[in-house]
Image (cartoon, rainbow, N blue to C red; front, side, top):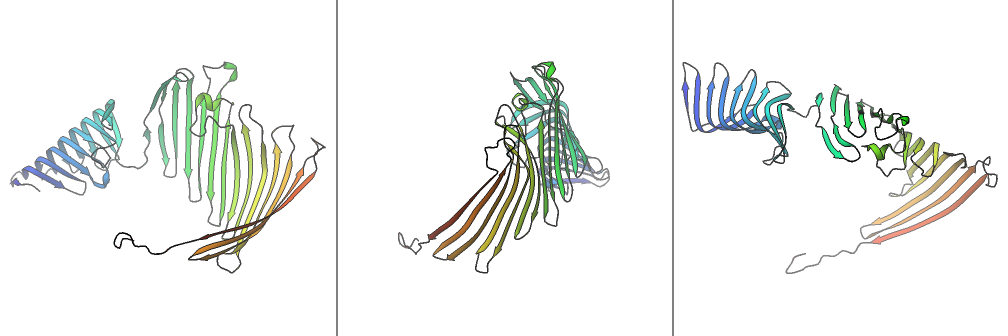
Length: 401
C-alpha cells in the first residue's frame, strides 16, 4: 500500500514513496520508500519499522533488504522479541541478518540493552528467533565478592533430543578455583526427572587435605495411567559447610539436613495408599533425628448415602531407625477411624465429626531397658461446628442495593 507507485514493465521494477505499508505472510513493514525487482524477488525499504509473523520479533531499520530466497538484511537496525513499545530487552546493530527457514539471527557490531540500559557490546552475536530449545551458550553470570573473589559462570546448553537435555556450567572463582556444574533433564510419557552434579576439585581457601567438594541430587517422578505414582528425591553433600561456602540453587544456607526420599503411591476415588522410605544427611552439629524405613499409610473414604456424609479410615505403620547409637529404634502403628456428617441448607450449615485416635509404640529395649517395650494411647474426638447466613435485600440512597 502506498500513496503512489511507479512500475517499469521492461525492468520489472517498482518504486514507491510516502506512507509505505508492506504486508506478507512473513512480516508487516511500514517505511518511507520502497524499491523492488519482481524478477529477482528482491526489495528494499528505507527508514522502516517491522513486525515478524507469529511474534518472532520486531524493530526498526535505516535500510531493510528482503530476498525471497535467502531472507532479509537490516542495516543500522534494532531487534527484540518483546511485543511492547518499551521492550525488556533489545539489540541495536550495524547489521542484522535473518536467513530464510533459519532458527537463528546474526548481528554485527552489536549493543545489547536491558530496559534501555546498554550492558554489552559484541562484534558478532547470534540470537534465537523462536522459543524452541537450541544448543548454545546461555547468558553468563558475573559477580564480585569477598567469598568467591571474581566469579564468572558460563552455562552451556545442549539440546540432546526433544525429551532430554543437559546444561554444563563451568564456574570460575578466583578465591576458590574452578567448579563444574551439570544438570541433566529427561521426560517420557510416564516419567520425568533431573540429575544435578557439582564438583570442585580443590577449594583454594581450605586445606588441600580436605580433597574435592561435591554435591549430587536426583529427582524422579512417575505417573502411570493405572493410578500408580512414584517419587524420588535423593541428595548428598560431601561436607557440612558446602552450602554456606559455595551456595546452592537447591537448598538454603539455613538448612540443617538433606533428605533422601523414595515414595510409591496408589490413588483411586476412595483409596490412597503410600509406602515411603526416608533418610537424612544431618549437617553440622544439629540433632540427629530418625529415618523412616519404611513408612506405610492408607486412607479410605466412602459415602454413607446421605448427602456429603462419609466414613473414613486412616492408618499408618512406621519403623524409625536412629541416626546415632544412643537413641532407641521403634515401630509405630496408628489407626484413625471416623465419620463426618454435614447438614447444609441455604441459611446455614451444621457439621458433626467423630473420630478415634489409637497409637501403639513398640520400642527397642537393647539400648535402654528402662523403656517400656509397648506403649499405647487411645483418644476420642468429637467436633461440632456450624454457621448461619443472614441475608436480606436492603435499599440505600434511592434504590441502590
